[in-house]
Each structure stands twice: as C-alpha cells, then as structure tokens.
Length: 388
Ligand SMILES: *Cc1c(COP(=O)(O)O)cnc(C)c1O
Image 1 (cartoon, protein in one colour):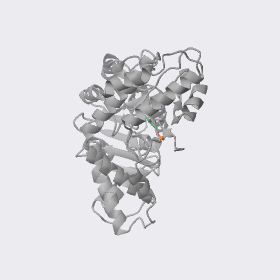
Image 2 (tube, rainbow, N blue to C red):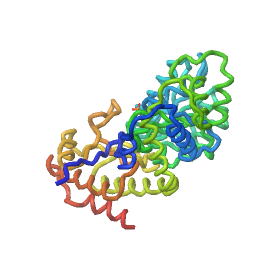
Image 3 (cartoon, rainbow, N blue to C red):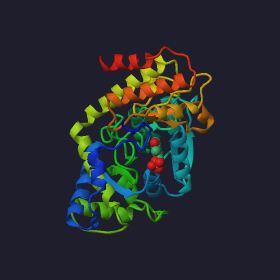
Image 4 (cartoon, protein in one colour):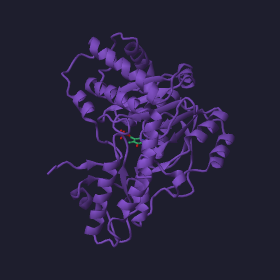
C-alpha cells in the first residue's frame, strides 16, 4: 500500500519529481557558469509567468513575507500615504509591513468576513486622499476570498496610486495579467502555485514602480531588501555575468527554473482554466455535502483554495480523520473565525484524481465524526463538473 498522503494545503504544495530532482543536484558555486545561465533563464521566465514583459524580476532567498517587505521597503518613504484593500489576515499583514516603513495607512474593509470591499468604497477612499501606493491581496489565503484585481488596479491607476498585488496565493494559479492589468508590483513565494519548495521571494516590478524607487529622497530602511543592492545582481544574472550581494539559494533557483519551465509548457491560459475547473468541482462537492464556505459568493471566491465552514457539530478533529484517510488539509487561520472552518489548497500540479481522492477522504472523515449525509454525494457533484 502507498503510504503517501496527498498534501492539499494552501502552500507548501506538492512538487513535481523533476522539481524535486533539481533540488538534489550536486552543489555548485553561485558564480559557476552553469548556475548563472539557469538563474538568468529563471528571471526571464518570471516575466512570462507574471505576464509582465517590461517588468524587473527579483528572486531573493526568503519567504513570501520578504516579497511583501520588498515593495514596502523600497517604495515607501516616511509619511507616504498607502491604501490597503483588506480581505483578511494577509491584508492585515501588508498594513503592518507598510506601517513599519512609516507609511500613513488607510484600510478599506469588507462589509463582512468572507466578502471583499466594494469597488465604490475603494474609489471613494482613493478620491479622498492622494495615495502613493495601494495594496490588494489577490487571494487572501486565510479566507479564500479572491478580489477583482483587474478593476481595482484600474482604479488605482486612475487615481495615481502605484498598485501592488500580493499574489502569493495566486501567481501561476489564479488568472493574473500583470502588465495588461496595469499592476506595478506583483509578488509571490516559491511554495504556492509556482510549485517550488519554500525559500524564494519572487517579485516583479513594472517601470512605474522602478521609476518611483529611483526617485526616492531617503535611503531604503532595510538592508537585506534594498533594491539598490539586488537590482545590479538581477541585471548581472540576466546578462550572464557573475556578481554577489547575498548568496542565492542555488538549489532552489535550479528548482524554480524547472518549475517555471513546466508552467510555461502548460501555458498560462490553460493553467488558469485548469485551476478554475478543479475549483468549481471542489466547491460543487462542498455545497453538495451541505457545507457553507467562508467567501460569501462565487464572485469573491478564489480558485486556488476552498475554505468550507465545518458543518454543525463538527470541529477540527475532522482533519485528523481526513489525514488518516489520505489527505492533509489546513485548519482555519483568520482569528475571528479560526475554529469554525478549514482550508483545502488545490493549486500547482494538482489534477482531477487528487481532487476526487481528497473529496473521498473528506467524506470518510465526515462519516467518522458522525455527520449525516448521503455517501458519495460530494464525489458525484465533483464528477458532474469534471465530466462536463
Ligand atoms: C502564504 C502567503 C503569504 C506569506 O508567505 P510566507 O511564505 O508564508 O511568508 C502572504 N500572502 C499571501 C496571500 C499568502 O498566501
């Protein structure tokens, strides 16, 4: 019997055998010609995955939180006004990061947990103040809420704010067209839909963001995140020249390049469509099983994860039974409702069989905890979507 459990959490996700093999290549110098070539290629591929041909890519050792730190450290000067479109835990974090660099932060909140702030509210806020920058969490991994990044970015542009998108749970999964949508900075981390083990912060900054960075009057108040240090390094790798500021995560960069190649082989639009379809199947099953979801409507639901509330009388012990049945899921994260819901990530290499196996494990878990439902009803609902 296979003793491998499916890892179905919203990051880290499962990695392809090719990506994992790249992690195990013999170690080399960060200035070896073969590594320079691979890093250079990975940076070029980042532009294609973020769909931002005129962007400046940065790949730096660190987690997604460093990727959030970078635009804040490099674009904010003390007293700058910043607007945070808040959809949950990671939006709260962005506000805290911006404040750390002296930003005067205003937040636009959603009318309820699981909802996104209405566009009119965001526009009213933008009208009311001259903001240097606004942040949008594309998918808030804590709530499963997805935002209308395209419309929000258009508003930001209209009112002259740099648009920064936290795409940690979206880039390479959720449809995101950085350049077409006028997003100035998009960022992610290696371990989510990009499909590389944890440890790389990935940021693409468009021309307007780089311009604002070059026009700073005060020094960047973070030594490690300073683009003055990293920009020459990224440029050197792309020009296939050796350079050094901080040692790159050599094996992770190898793995990243393999994963980005696989993503581009699938094709971005095909990849977005696959995530949408699997998500629809998953969410249909959850509804058929009688569970509500944290996002209040399909309009504000992410496609990279699903966040169901536990049914009446069921709690976090469900997840132990689901794990025993073969799938690892994540508990709640957003403090006000933490104990009331759980999360399933379905991004990256995830396929139809993974979705069905996970739903099977959820049904087994539900029956173990004594929840009454018609066995197979979730699987049937998912199959109805998948066989369409
Ligand atoms: C995971 C996540 C982060 C934080 O990334 P870490 O790698 O855990 O630091 C930030 N924003 C979103 C939307 C995330 O999903």
